[in-house]
Image (tube, rainbow, N blue to C red; front, side):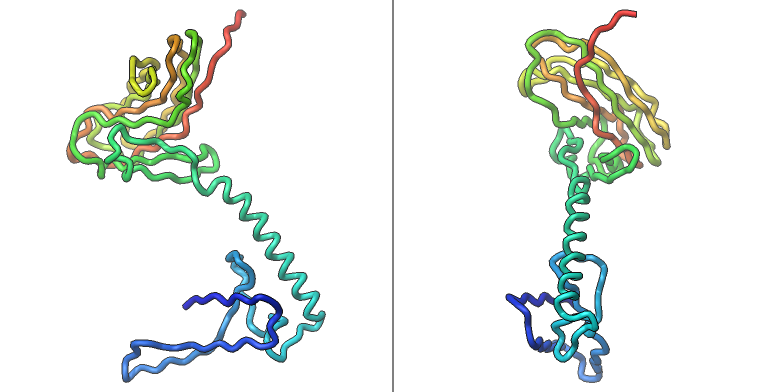
Length: 240
């Protein structure tokens, strides 16, 4: 059971009433203990009511003001740690299906080595045939042809019923795919990790969009495919 007690200032006395509803006639409810969580964030510290300075008739040895200062300091530390966690709790961009109906089958998880990984539940994808996914890209078009490079990591877990895997980069003219390059055909091993790296020339007046295709998916395909955030950018020529 959870509840929230909001106080505008220091309270001299707090009365707590607990009500049990829809109780069976032969049952008995007994409240043995009550715990309070101070502050607005869940810190995992649940002090007993006897430890709180504003509990009726209870004053800690160091005094109420000192105890309040310690609680405020604890809350500040919790808030600071939460600000760090918020940076990695939700990815800003994830892989998306060519068909929006496939988006519910893409979930994300954080990995300390690879960052956010978009996991595709192959068994839940409807139908058969080629299934495509793409990563959100910078829609700004390149005004001149230029060398590009990109890389990503592909993982498979318990994969079966897929002919091959093809990471690639699409040439986008606005919202229209006008071509592709850097297409790599990977053997669909059941459990494997692929490091994909490729350099290519992006044509003029085009934008680069990373894409990924499951080729020849069978109706009974199973397993998961993990796709990391692709790294995409211009390359500089060099002579050796």
